[in-house]
Length: 336
Image (cartoon, rainbow, N blue to C red; front, side, top):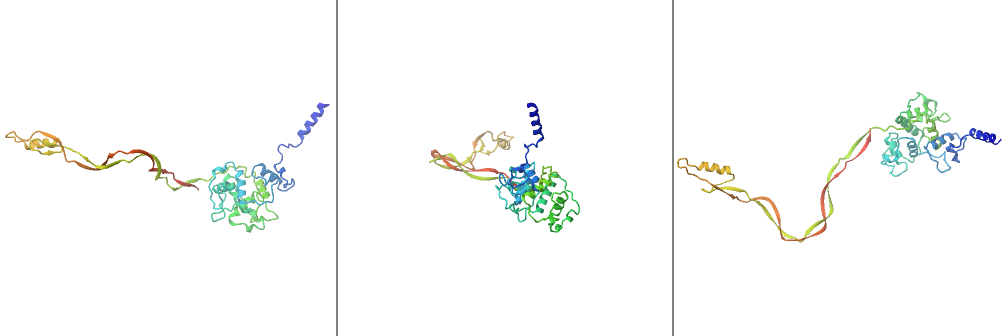
């Protein structure tokens, strides 16, 4: 009887839904199981795309800023690494802000261009058409299907309100049911809530299953070439103190050759031998002969040397030292 009861209980346990993979959305008190966005929120949180606004709240109707949205996409991307993006392409995105690396990643990946005047407006709410454009650029970077259905926007009464730069992206989003609209309207200028963004990402989960973004080609642009610079620094050296002396000119003594008979001076032995030949009388057999090497007139070299009159002593002192140092080139990467 006990064996039969244990088998029955074991069978019932297997038949019950497994709770180990309980829905990630269950912990949020403001995400009801019957809400239209429940599955989308569960997907977004499970995939690590979103965090809640607290341990128990998701705030589905909360605003989604531009900085938040690119951060969500960065979290989705396989080859994203925050530490690679320390700079900023926008004047209003300061280094150190939590959204700075994702915004720079989105800029370098050509997902965003900013809002003009060198700004990104990270704290502005993202509009539905802006969201479509960023997702469309993301799809292109991932090699996803970016085909469109001609006339897809015609089903919506407010399609004329779509900005020119966003029409292709909005048509793509509607063609692939990434955006579905409401009551026959797309509301392109309207802002997207956190729940709506979760739903949009849920709708595109198969389309954007490949989350490895291809980075654009880039070239290195030199701003300041590498060069040597002369720098002056202080260095502790042993120097001589109290020494008295003077400078004297450096002279060079050149050896010359003097004839023993007539006293003629030549610079080389060869010239002296030629002198002997020139003075030889072939009839009498007489002429000059023999020479002596003597010092010639001193020649000033233009140099001087120091002569110590009174020796000094050595002390350690800080001395200015000049040296050539190499300054590395400064440049930046530009994306083609």
